[in-house]
Length: 354
Image (tube, rainbow, N blue to C red; front, side):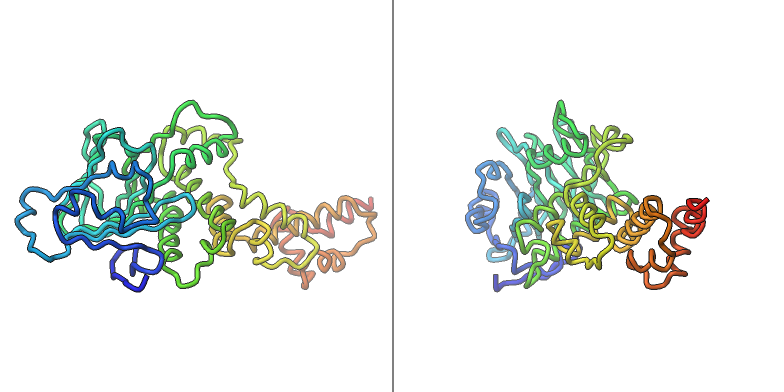
């Protein structure tokens, strides 16, 4: 799009990847007649069950022709992404049968009071994240000058990743603790992914969202990270030893690295084999392995060198071994090997000769 709108928080400057509707009268906002302006995004009929109204006292602050609200919409694979900026205090409520999907929300300006079917109220601001489902009777009550980002995750998409994490079927849908700390240790990776998504949606040339394979890998990572970082009804099973915690992106990358341990490896080659961008590859290793792709490559080379010593005829030298597995400096190779396995490669070789 040619129009851009400056915002704060995780969103930055809206435009490019967003379709924008500027709403200037109450009837358009409360009647939902602006929805067609957001097409081809948010075209599912059940999104019409999201309704908005200006709160009582705020109605008197409205002057004809003023922009009451800005609605912006985009998409990232299976995810529907919305940005809402309300000048006046407004309430979003969900009617009829509601939506089965999950909404990850980041407030960048003002505050938001959330209440769900259980009627308890939670105060959400820029430091407190929100994840909720589109159940009937859900309400979001926003203050004046409010901005928020909403990422709608289809129920089927989240359940699919949950089954993969648990390596087995689930008896019921996941239910999340609605409010969480964006600055919490385990949530920082999720926060970074949301920020990265917004940058990608607005970039002139998208890298992560530039191909179907890379987009799928990114959506995988975001949903897996959500399930692992925000408490939910399956957190105990997810954290249980033996649970599958790695998305396909990581497994493909690990397989490629291990099978090419004796060859030069470039990160873009690993990313291509994994079906993602280099940036996503780095995020995957950070989130699921607490390391970087380069460190994993080094460790894989050391492990391959150890296997080579164990299976060799004892005629190989430390220098030959180092060069074979990509270490130009035999002394550094020896130090790294000792740090990784508690003994030097020469020690292993001597033991095998005796």
